[in-house]
Image (cartoon, rainbow, N blue to C red):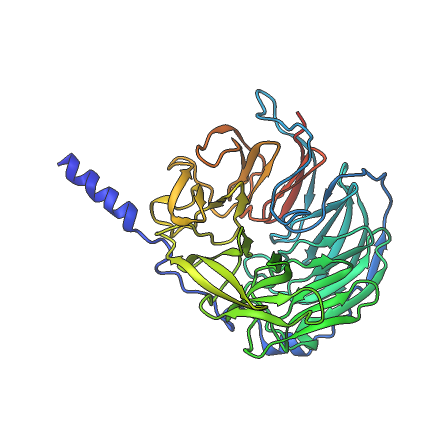
Length: 462
């Protein structure tokens, strides 16, 4: 009898789909109206407050989403802790935030975070001291939002001279990194007719050679904006009427050609990043067209790209090809989430030839586990964290030969860096919160993490 019951439980575990009854949010279900979009006057960057200064910390840099190399791997050589031992985590400061999942960028000791002030109804770019959490200045503007699974959820892009942000309702702002002086703003919703994505904008801006790269998905598909002047340097047509997704643009070089990869709502494409054809579509593939795309493309080797989406979509590997200067892309492997590597929210890490990710909640027996797969076969698991180590939708990062993995409830796990075996070194509850989904940043031996309403800075130097 026990064997029969056990077999039944095992069968339920493998077949149970926790999102089978979930209704996907669609336009009109998130309390936004056409009136909200059209009639509101938004003066991007109109308010400024200066409160102090801080000594720079040269070399402390996590300048954009997924770090300088866009791979979510810290290259710094600062030794980090393997465990806390008997000590409590050394939390340097805590900052209360508007509800959301936006994460910080760091440049030479200054932290830049796009927040939302729910009382004033403002998008707020906050510049803070990395060491103390003291606010140095803020640049803000009025924009009306209604809470919808959080509010702000993007990471600024920061260079020596500029900070570029994208707000929840698609307002793009560029300021001077040191002074906070407003350089320019573009309201994508009004100027390009953009339909704001479900649950607001998740796209993080990209700066390449003093040009801000923004996926639009309105009257244009993508634009390049001169950071100094706000002039549109180039513009990509949108003949298919694709819409903005939550994913971010990722650069790729194939056969000597630089391009930008973007999975919109409607399809995925490669857009020329250089030369006389800059801004032109090099290739497109309409087979990848889920209703919601949160993870960004992962650029692999040999012209391959890994793409994934949640809510039952799964994952795929795409191969870019070139023949006589013409480019194309085809799917070489595609599967449902219970059949292979997939991710609902976080973008997987590509490390030493392996893809690392947290599986979605509809990932069958592997759901919510931290896993590795080889892109030659994304349906054959190589490493798994196991049934007792599941992490929800939380973020993860590689630094100093270790994984730092955050679960939904604010518990931080330190694990040994390996693509073949998962070994926990230590874990500790850092925040007693919920929805800890914002990306982690590590620089200078400081770890920045958040839940839905607060950001903490932890000293993790060994």
